[in-house]
Image (cartoon, rainbow, N blue to C red; front, side):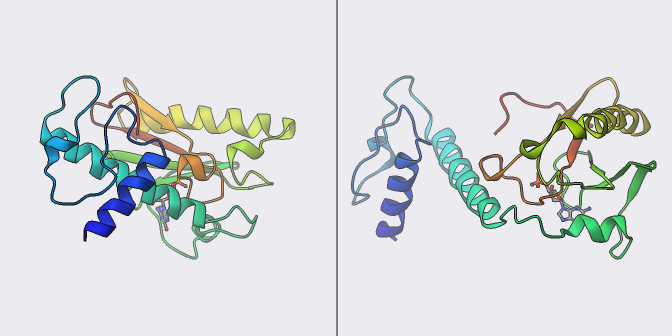
Length: 185
Ligand code: 5GP
């Protein structure tokens, strides 16, 4: 157990997820007060939440990195072809919008181009994609109106493993229905 903590903390330290905190080299018979913030003091509960979030974030990043952008078909192809069901909220000739299976807000809709055309991620965009990218963004506004969140919503695009992208078919997350926080994780 101690070894697991030691490994996790040294990984986090190396990953610079714990900037500003003093982390002991060994997680021996110690208590949380050894983890003294070098700047402002932090209550133990907040510190534990911070550690947990950091570990989850690192795990998500690893999971996303494991899903390589190999240009192969994705689950979204099956959603477009209706091979697997989804809750579709909007579509036109170019884009499809459906509810995220794992919603992060009361409204969480994904908008994807029906033709991927090399757009596995935003980082792969080329000049020829400018039109569909604009179309996706306009569709985001249309979806926000349909969902009743037009007065305040967030559009997210995760591009690549460092952003925890997990499905390599470009998609916009439309999130709303609750107060969003900033900065994002
Ligand atoms: P990413 O992490 O790549 O930015 O987002 C992928 C999103 O696709 C995730 O939020 C995930 O919940 C969603 N997702 C993955 N598989 C399915 C699925 O089969 N159906 C639906 N509706 N959403 C999915």
